[in-house]
Image 1 (cartoon, helix red, strand yellow):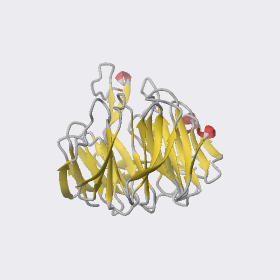
Image 2 (tube, one colour):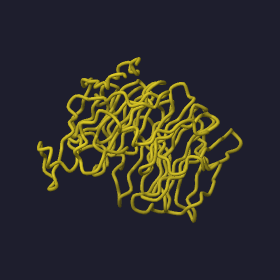
Image 3 (cartoon, rainbow, N blue to C red):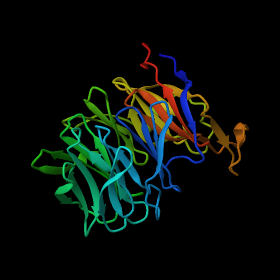
Length: 356
């Protein structure tokens, strides 16, 4: 049997901040846009986390509605979706267009999505029914509007697919179920299809070869993989099998579980972020957990029943880590935010399961 591998990752770049960002948008040039819950400013960083500019774009959280930021694939436009408006700026943050709408209820809201050719942008606004709109960017005209099934019950997240004329619309509804839609479009038309086979799944990402997309469970269900473009269930990994490993965290009162995040890091391997703060590695073909990433400076601590750190195995109630946000970048890096207020980048080595 192959040995369970612990893979140490040294910090490649880091940026210390007075508070953790509430959102991180990855830019086509490898840079990043950061916004914050309590501050209206947006910070633009290059690929090495060096600050390029910092501007007040009113991108703070208002009435528990986060401001979502997205950049166009040509790096020309920035979209900001907040409590009561959608705004588009140029790449330097100068306002070009604004669409005002009724306020989102607490903890709801919508992201924005640009087409790969940067001709269109989509967003959802709360009308009598929540409505998916398509905006033509050449003249900022709304050319399609599609009412959705709910009103002020869901948040809306967009995910690109390997097909440039399709994208996924994810609609989590708090502790209720998650619905996933496939939107297909041309210059003239747009259709939306509910993916009932992906009911209550948290969307991850696509394998680099574009053949599989991964979904994490909403609660205690398995991780599931779906084919693309057929969107048929290709495999599933129950959590009791995922965590049947050489586990040094079994002293906890409740076992570890998947913390809503499963992401491909290459065609053969996906990463699972756990409630304890672990970054487990799983082989795509055998669905066996063969290792764990250990990012420098990201500790996992044991806690007792009073919530205090402990090293007494008999007193351990739970575990918790330092990682808040986990992303796999288009450059094949691991990006995390750390609870100390740092944004960090780690280079991912070529990772695959060792032969048995």
